[in-house]
Length: 81
Image (cartoon, rainbow, N blue to C red; front, side):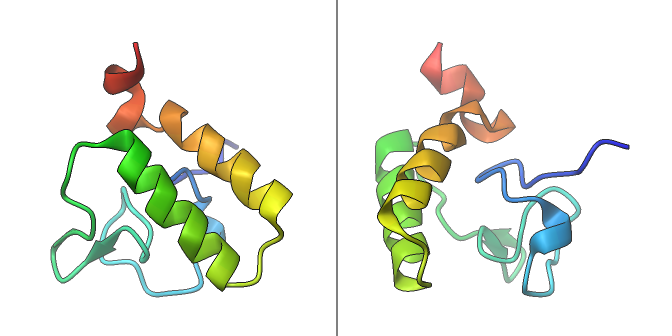
């Protein structure tokens, strides 16, 4: 069975520590009925995601890798072609 992941940051929804309001996005990316980052700048979103991962205690190598993967998320895929 394929693990469903957030369409914005690719975090597996099964590992979402919060209560997600959406079936497509994790609780970090979607709150109060809208995306937390509504912009279209992939690099800015990656920067914010990296800072958030580091603030939550993830080591810099893992955070860099997961940040790099974000470009393959459905939300951003069309912008990286």
